[in-house]
Length: 411
Image 1 (cartoon, rainbow, N blue to C red):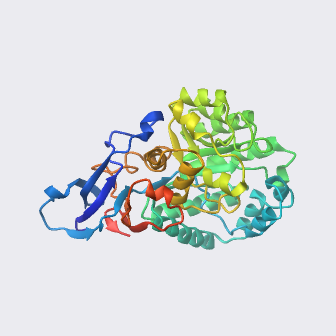
Image 2 (cartoon, rainbow, N blue to C red):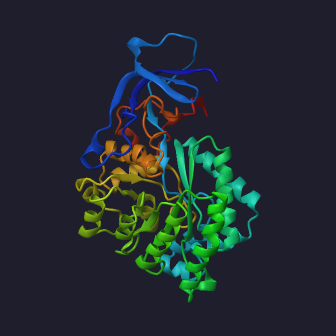
């Protein structure tokens, strides 16, 4: 592959040292930039960068940024991007005033997606997911985590995870897989929680570990789903197979999920729409990342996470899309960054760090991506010319991504 030189960069964004793996608290407002810049890609990696007065010499393919900004690719650390079909019928029910709980009781929600997935052949499931993710890539996403959790049986959870494994093999971006059979209780186990947990621990986990299908263990710790005690039991079982936790916590209530996640050294605890002083205190005393999902709050009309309290307590905050067919049917990370600013009151610099370097850290990928650093993957996107950094989250309806570079090549 020939080396690629990007010239005429108005501003190069996110120049953190390669040794920086995660950014916490007040430091999230520090987003190093370089104006009037260039960047050189070689063998799929960032080889060098600098200012226009010292352009490198040599034989390169040259591409002009035309004065646009260059951002490290978005690192979306929480998605449910593999699903059989959308749920726009529930969207209409929601407009008519039905609550999330009422929609679930009427056969909607996670069980609706599980029923659709059961009837979807694996090749079709893969093809739909691949097309969906390529649309996200066009919007600037350059690393992705995908969860199972619409299977809820041994056969269908394995089907989802095998699709994710195939996506890892064919997509031009890094992908991580989270095992989320503990997403809800399937109908057959509604009154036999212990039986379903036993199925996860003794049937699903051994097969998943044997095939190397998952990177993380996930549980939906929430009232009406999995209790904190049940969550801890499942996290302990996952740990025996080398699966560190990345869990759903505190979406609707103070579920105890954050405390359980911190206790078990979770890479991240995700959602956190409901927090209190004790939650913030536990996170502040840990290395666990708080991953916030404002697209879900926007779509469901539930409270937004208290990002300011977390940042002020020196917690590392990430932003992710929560792309899924029921509660966040958008994986557009540009919009997520805008919501981070508009609804979570994050500074543009904080929101961008949350969606890049901290998102990478929440997937244990910050040695590869998340910043413009020599030796990292040459995954970044070029915007149209903008008047300032803040213009990207400010102009939330505008398609500003002009060109995507992945592994040092024009996508």
